[in-house]
Amino acid sequence: MPRDLIFIHSAGPQGGDNGSNRLVARLETALGDPFRIIVPDMPDPERPDADAWLTGIDQVVSQANPGAVLMGHSLGGSVILQYLARNPDFWRENSQISAVFIAAAPFWGLPDWEIDEFTLTGDEVNALQDCKNLHFCHSRDDNIVGFDHCETYLRHLPQATQIALDSAGHMMTEGDLASMVEKILIHA
Image 1 (cartoon, helix red, strand yellow):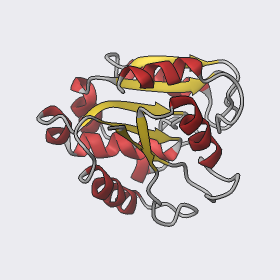
Image 2: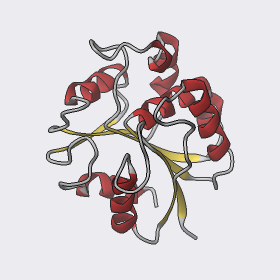
Image 3: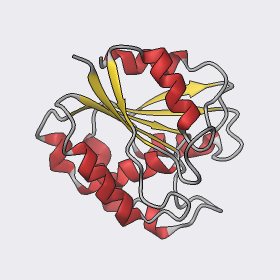
Image 4: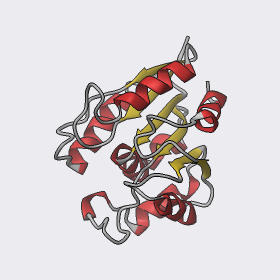
């Protein structure tokens, strides 16, 4: 039976070639049969609200099969981190989630990225210190969310691993995703 991979998309328009759709299509092709990719529609992606997205994540994660992989792209990754930080018993005490992949996520609070509702508090960062199998994927050529965001996450969460891509850009629609796909497949 395929393992669930719950994918939380980026902000902005979704559908067709917009948003995270092309990345999801690339992942479906690359990962194949070991995974069933679940992509819930997050509420109002063009005007995202953290609380509404947290509720949406909770609904889909609570229905996942044990051992699911949780992945978020851009804002989706940021909100996954908020969800995990606010629900530590969920990942500490059960095997619902086997790994977390955060792709091209902004580190809210950096200069020009100061939006309080998405910024992790100090307590939330501390809560994530014990989160195992946490992987940050980011392309060095991301011209929307710079690579320094990934490096900042890793300074705050040193237990996490980094998957540095060279030419995938922010949307990860082109370039080599092999190192990210290999890490995901480990959890199949």
